[in-house]
Image (cartoon, rainbow, N blue to C red; front, side):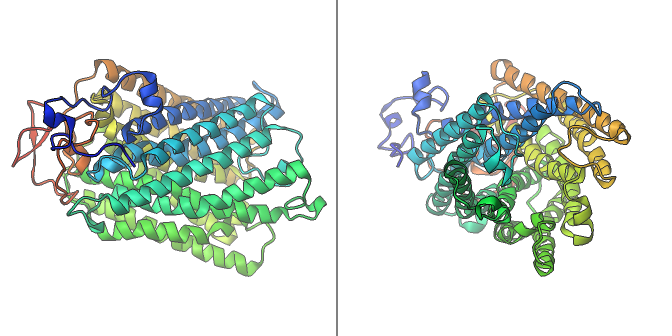
Length: 563
């Protein structure tokens, strides 16, 4: 457990003896104080830096892929390098960025403060989780140095067990280690939510972001071991020649697909459930209105987590499984869309007649609803047997996947980053540039991926290095969109870095939110709160009033701002 034993200002704390309490950034200095820290906020920041580095690496690979596809023939790389690029792009983005992005970075920083707690339940396990993430990331990068991997990010057998590239060992073992990081984080979050809620915060007074993290944690603990065992079996088969998945050795390659997708479809919701939790916070705060249908949104998070384990077979409609199994998986695929739709309709109802503030985080929330809605709609096409078989392994799949994962998780991550940036750094960013970058990314994203729906419906297969001349226009248009999107991301990096040195000092509550993390100073004290906070309705904004002198919101009953 943490070494923190009391809130500052209480009898057992140093501040009670006349000492001053600093914020978490300045509490202790030096690189070692960060590397061995047990402070959940510092661990969250280290996760954030590492995850953003992975996003940059994966993004550069994506730009190289789109540049290569500008022409039907050779453009900048050969076919072998192209195969390695899209494999590593997928693996880096999925395992190093999207899966840990919101839970590990934002969740680590925000979850204990939202609960009014001093830290997570197991601070040392939390730090262990981060170092396991770093080890897994290093092993993934080593795979590039030793020759790369060209199997696709799914590592489908028997090719992944017979290819001559040694990078398969490194990348799959890296993913295996990353799985432990994910499991430990999920375990920590579940115990923290169960045991460290403050008096007055029952299950149905928790912020919906915590419900999203809770559902995610359940999936992490139940599904991730399946992936770990599967990857370990793949490594054993490749190293020892034991027939598990390779048909030439008496194995079954379809068995690998069952194992892999039993984890990887729930993993889609590891990525999207925290994103949905973020959107629930943003929509309510920037509509200045109590969230509509709180109970339905909370229960839908758990429903998504449970139903996600029952739909893996819709990835395998063309694998030769029985027609009855295909029909069952198709039906279950439609059913999992219901709790997702409940969330979307409740967000729209929350905004109805609300006082909507189009600040940067809200622009990302609106982008999420549009893009994720389109991704979910095209998912229904792929859940229907009549269309799925024809669209299988085409660019329609690529577009659908990116509308759900990028248009969903990444856009929500950007919304969360901008929303909690003042709390993390204590500085405000340039709001006009934030709105401009949100618009640029929205336009660039749709230019990049919407043409791929058209290509896929016309029969353009995914993963192909060369393509027919009739698809040239769509690929060029898509590549231009990717460059526009990259401009938006570099703009974000520029003004966020600038804000750290020149940004206006952030008030405790710049957005007028009612959850507990906005009741401490920005950035938070080392112990999070100077005294135990009082939990209330996380979506009741009636007690808040804007104070132009500090550029933030304060309580009507206690107008003195925290910090």
